[in-house]
Image 1 (cartoon, rainbow, N blue to C red):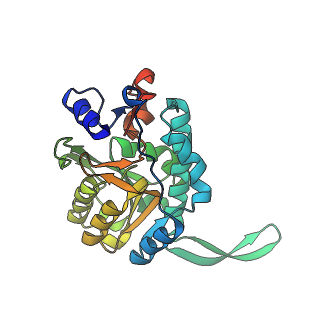
Image 2: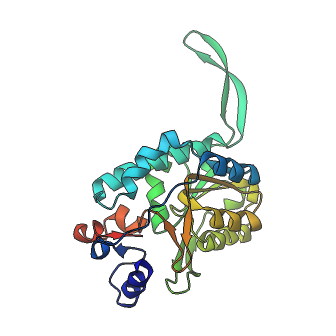
Image 3: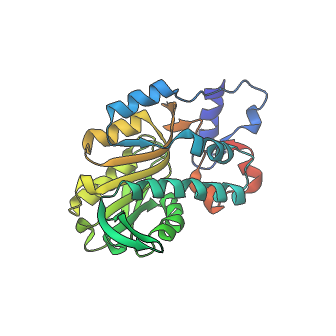
Length: 271
């Protein structure tokens, strides 16, 4: 019944992009999704040495808020920014450090600071949703440059179409932090990574940040780009095959973050 209602919603265009009208099926038994346990997560981390999953003690409260269909735009944006900042700081922590001696008010100490100047770091957002990362990113690395790649997903085929890019001329010499809040099939991220590769960016200089991901998307990226790094806040247990949506997911992150969905619709829709 649940899948049939989903198909009807798609055919009649009753919801925007990845949202589903849950109010119409409120009396039906909706699936209850259970997250990967520690053993499953450890297997995934062991399999992919360049994968980092943020400790759930830092993220589970925030994710519980932004997943909730009753969370309004203000709370969604505020808590998304909190989670994004955690990812940004984790990405910075993995950039190569330089050691030198500095002086504190009480004496000298060994300092370990990021080896690169701000200008040698570039935030690249996959439009539109990736732009949500820029506010916190620039607070952490205020002198970083910004690149943007516009990729449109075909909702029928789930295949991405490249539309636009604007990247720094010297991006091949920079440490690149690629940003997109959701990693489902991995098709859009793969296309963005190919664009960066064509610009001369080395895999080992790329860190991909995503709030929510799944095993299939992670596998796809590492299959083609094994030397890049991926940092995610949580790995969702299901990629719905019929629609290529994460479950339990967040919904349409861009609509919810940028406030382009009506509040009355937001409480009744879910990915």
